[in-house]
Length: 512
Image: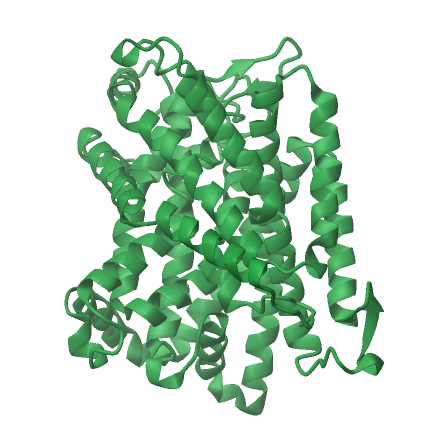
């Protein structure tokens, strides 16, 4: 997933437009930043981590001894099941929104500000987050509904409304579900899925094709609405808009089919590229792992006190891990509810592999490359994506002067595909949130929303996103609060369903 950290790491305006600051814009930016920091402060991070620890202990570390089965279920669809897409398709839809620029830039930012130990705490958050994702996937399938025409209706809003009914004597929890859905729609269309993602793509494109673009030189750009933009930005923005329209207007099945191709390919390609760099620097890998573990508990001893205390390492690592894999935010269960399955626990197992793939594999590879090459060191003065670019460049130093170009090109491709799939995933999430708010029978509103979504993608490269990032990130964080309340209160339900599933599986009543 992406967040406001990336907004500071990538160029704020892909076209490097000349902006005139005004007092009201400064005040608005400060207000949004305060709201963002308040929402994503320690209370939310601690609550998400507590929920993961609670579920992990309650489920007796289910995600460890069932990981092999989880990967097997991913590729095997049960017979005679209801749903919109296969279990693998649902997982890829969820991964399309989680595997993004946060896996590249978020990791770099965490290590750059919290030291190598931040990667250790990121893995800790992911370990407990797998139990959270399991519970989200299970509840999404258990409480989902079907329309008369066979479409699936499911997600946190349904297990909040239906599952919490009667808890604490309160019969109507729909208000909490409505809050979640409202925050989801707002986060999706205002930035997380549209403006900020296309900005990431156009920024990466310009960085590679026209890094020295000067907005004051009319001969090197194109004037639009009184502002000069580089040609790579305009071309990339148009292509992303067209591709988005061709996919999202086709609905979930087309989003899933595209994600099932792009996500596995890009994830495998990215991991192999990182693995190649690590193999080329194999002698430094063991020392890097030792540094990551030791620095997690005493960062100052290994960084000369330049990146703060153990608290900062924990905070940055856990926060970036949560941002990346979205465990506890309530987004992934929206996709999980559409899976073709009759067993909620089975889909929960498939759902938890998303956190494993996103953080424990993809983020770990990025982090290891950064630590091995030493580009995280504050003395270098690098920030965000520049840390990763320099890491890849150093890792490929044996290629000579072309190493920097290859690293820049690879990251442009990775950022483009990762951000594009995030656009697709968040379109589906926000559509389902809107559908819950307006009712499943008003599909004409959903279709209008799709065109609005594409429109926001189209205008994204030409907008300043400093405020948009904060607003979108704030609403994205607000989604977590209703979801976490439901996960904690419904944890006994998660345990009962899991216990019943495991008992029937051990008796041979269902496929193992």
